[in-house]
Length: 113
Length: 111
Image 1 (cartoon, one colour):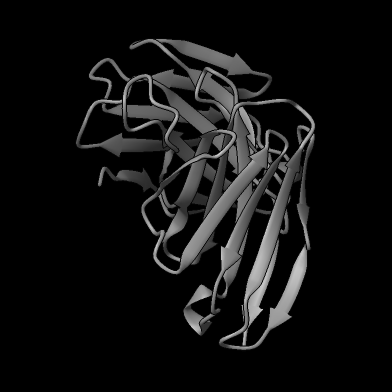
Image 2 (cartoon, helix red, strand yellow; image 1 turned 30 degrees about the vertical axis):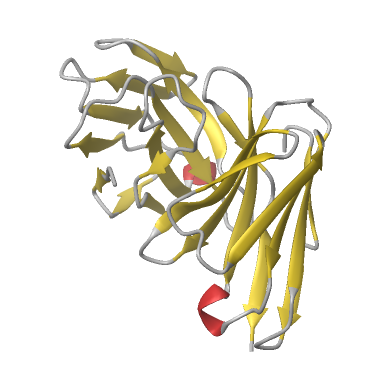
């Protein structure tokens, strides 16, 4: 099946730093989703992207839908302790289908005091 | 958790026993999903439903069955649990835009 490759796998940063992570696919996606998961909880949707080139913000988070439709980027500005968690990219593998999402393996964000 | 309740939240069981996990939603969404989450694998789709009594297999469906007799409930059954099914199980629901909302998860240990 289709795979989403997320990088980096882990990030160790200092509070206040900006964060960048990305997700790539070998095939085209028509929707890109970014989720965050806190320990012991389910993933929570952060941002949804629907058009190639789209840039969308949610507070300190900004995500972009790559022009090639095979990648997406998530940036977090001025990180704070509550940003710690696992960030997943995801997308529906089939256009218009509701038969599940393909997920990347996640980027672990760790903030050092 | 977008009106999604998973039960139980934690369960320990023995190899060979049947186990049923329940997902209940109050959003009246048509689509419901079961995923499992394992270290190094991320979230993988087990089964999904696109309506009452309409279900289909996902990427890792072997050893699992599902049922949906009402819009609000989606059950995941392990007919005979194995140690490889030790995992965290998440239910998700979806509206027409493919955006999925997740429950809090069920942590299952098969000894």
